[in-house]
Image (cartoon, rainbow, N blue to C red; front, side, top):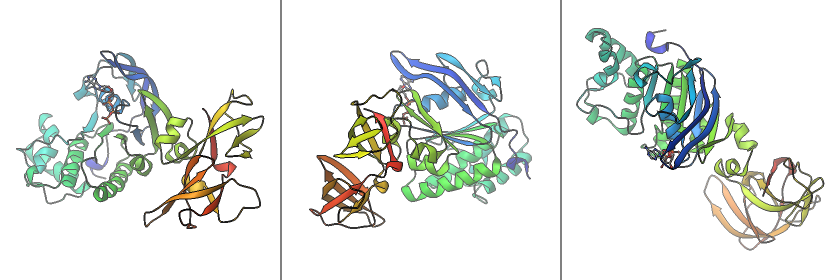
Length: 353
Ligand code: ATP
C-alpha cells in the first residue's frame, strides 16, 4: 500500500448537543450524532435544513453557538480548522486557477514544507487514485467539470485526513456523470477506509453512497440509519415524504388497525394513538397492488385518472374515494378504467395526522 492509499487513521465523529444560530435564524437545533470510523455518512435534507452549516462546524469554518464536536474522542472546540486533520471538498471545488493540476493537488504538502520532488511523486500517486494519471501538468482551467471534481478530491486527500468532508460535490455535474461519480467516490472511499461525510439534497445519491444516512429537516436530525432502513421504516411523515415517493392517505384509528378508503387494515398504530383519532397512512407507489377485478381479499375500488409512462416504469394515478394514489404496477390500465387497489398491510406505515 502506498502512503496515499493509507489515511493517517480513520476517526469516529461525535456531535454532542450542537446548536447554531445566525441572528434570529436557528440553523441547527440540538444536534446529537455518533458517526462510526471508516464509514460514509450522508447528511440529507431539503435546502435550508442546516446540513452545510453542520459540515462547516465540523470543519471549523463556523463556531457552534453551543455543544461540542469530537473527532476520535478529541474535543475540537479549541482546534483551528487547519489543525483538525480534516480534508474538505467544496461545492465549487475552489481550485487555484493559476496552478497546474499537480500543483493544486500538492498545495497543502507545499504549505507543510514537503520538498518539490516528493510533492510531485505524491501528486502523481493521488492523481492515479482519482483516475487522472498523466494530467498533472495541465492547467486546471483546461479540465472538464468531472475532472475538476477529482482534482479537488485528490487535493483534500493529499494531507491524509482523519475525516473527509464533501459538500454537494456532484451538484455541478450532469445527471449521467453524477451517477457514475457516485459509484466511483464510494469505491474510492471504501478502498481508503477514510471516515467521510457527504452533504446532499439528492436522496438517490444518499441511497447509492451512504453507509449511514442522517435525514435533516428544519435544523434537526429527523432520522439516522442505513439507507434501506430509512427508506422502508421512516420514523415520521417528514422522512416518509422526503425519501422516495409515497402516497399519504387520511385514515381513522381503530382499536387494532385503521379504516382508510372504506376498508379496514390491520396495522400497528403510533404510540399514544387512541381509537377514533385521525391518522395518516403511507404506502410506496411500488407497493400498491392494482387489480382489474375485485381481489378475493377485498380492496377499495377506484378509477384510473392519469397514466405516466416513463419507459422504465409506468405510474398509474388512481382516484379512490376522493384520494389520488400513485401506483407503479406491472399491469397497464387505460385512463378511465375501473381498478381495485390493495394496500398490503406489511408495506403500510401509520403516522399521527
Ligand atoms: P442548501 O442545500 O440550500 O445549502 P442547507 O441545508 O445546507 O441548504 P444551510 O446552508 O446550512 O442549509 O442553512 C441553514 C439555515 O441557516 C438557512 O436558513 C440559512 O439561511 C441560514 N444560514 C446559513 N448560513 C448563514 C449565515 N452565514 N448567515 C446567516 N444565515 C445563515
